[in-house]
Image 1 (cartoon, rainbow, N blue to C red):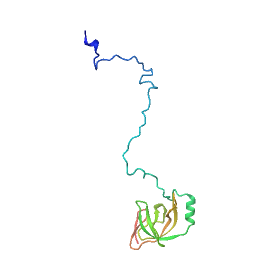
Image 2 (cartoon, rainbow, N blue to C red; image 1 turned 60 degrees about the vertical axis):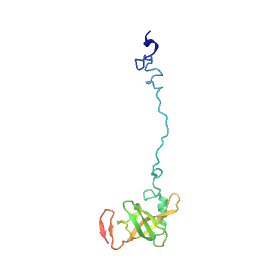
Image 3 (cartoon, one colour; image 1 turned 90 degrees about the horizontal axis):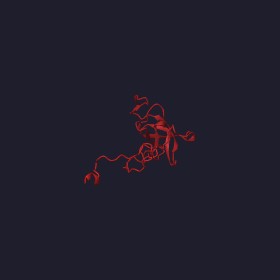
Image 4 (tube, rainbow, N blue to C red; image 1 turned 90 degrees about the vertical axis):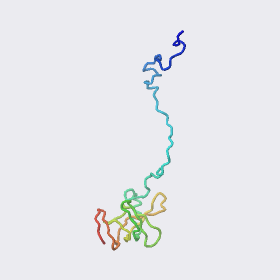
Length: 161
């Protein structure tokens, strides 16, 4: 009695299955192919997740015509530039009448000079969506340059005042 007849040899040649490439059980059949099931991945919490939304601040480019018309019809206010960062594209104005500082975007500054700390400016105000509770300065014009400071033009030239 031989051992080959009673127990199959592991790893040895197996009989080939009689499956043709066009049969439904074949891996080459289009009916047997399917996409893997979706499973949600666990992601590590990112500190920036949830903050990657577009800025709600209206700039000159995305401000509606009605908001621009309302701002241009409003009164002209005066104040002093508290700070302005050309690289960040915004700054703040301290109103001469008092109150909290007012945000100013780089697209709303008119004239050839970049505002510097201490410059006297005139401006109009526009509300900031979505709740319209805060305001920002629009049509900002430098009326008096701060004495003794170097001012930069938008083209990059530096001028002493």
